[in-house]
Amino acid sequence: MKANLIDGKALAAAVKKDAAEQVAALQAQGITPCLAVVLVGEDPASQVYVRGKINDCAQCGIQSRSVRLPETTTQAELLAQVQKLAQDPAVHGILVQLPLPPQIDEKAIIEAIPPEKDVDGFSPVNVGRMQIGEPCYLPCTPAGCIRMIESTGTQMAGKHAVVIGRSNIVGKPAAMLLLAKNATVTICHSKTENLQELCASADILVAAVGRAGFVTGEMVKRGAVVIDVGINRGADGKLHGDVDFEAAAEKASWITPVPGGVGPMTRAMLMLNTVEAARRAAGV
Ligand code: GUN
Image (cartoon, rainbow, N blue to C red; front, top):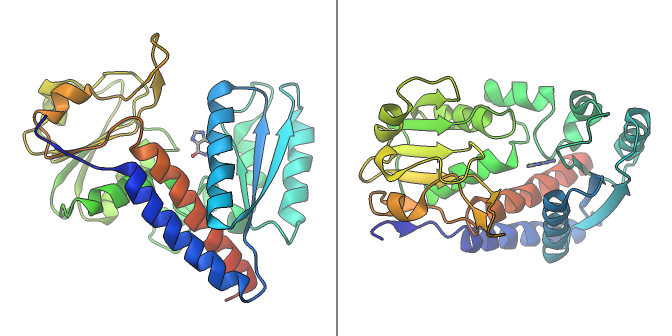
């Protein structure tokens, strides 16, 4: 392996330390940030993610409220829960873990979260504000990716950044944030022709496909910065990224591992958004 490792765990620890210091300062003013985490159903991956988020809150001194609802929860029941949290002045951030069961309209639930409590940055208001560069809550995974790229000292301005994947949660916002850093951005997806050539011309490659080993060594430009957003559980029970790590690490200058890369950073960025939500609610 020739590439340097972008240590997501270490970066996340630094971000959480920053969040904890901000929490301490707010507590001195009588404000305790509080995040409500809503989980519907028993999806094992979602359970792991939610547990991680609640642990991170504890580490940072952020209060958390865990709301667990059964798989059979109706749209009206979930909406009522979200509305209750929306109206509760002690709750600063609301996170509804996705995906939701099929009987629930995800879009309607996200829209029910007031933009000022939308610490995931998924609501249309926050998405719109991000597009036009207004203050907003940035979605945690893409914001974490940008921090990781910055940590390498890589200049994004003028560089060719290729994002593989166009989801609302990762691909699209990652592309927007790279654009905001003045990168020249290409978004690739399942219909893209010449995918291999496009990726191989990327100075910065962000893989958010959801398929283990999708990015091969041939798709990585020598010296590129490779950010692997994928978390795929293999038949071996282990977690695998979207990138063939061994092959990519022979060519990249910097690369994120899976696990221990983007995942911890995503959760750390959520802590920062929650602290910010508490600060804005208190007007301090
Ligand atoms: N499911 C996968 N990633 C996320 C995320 O960042 N936030 C929420 N709420 N659900 C997710």
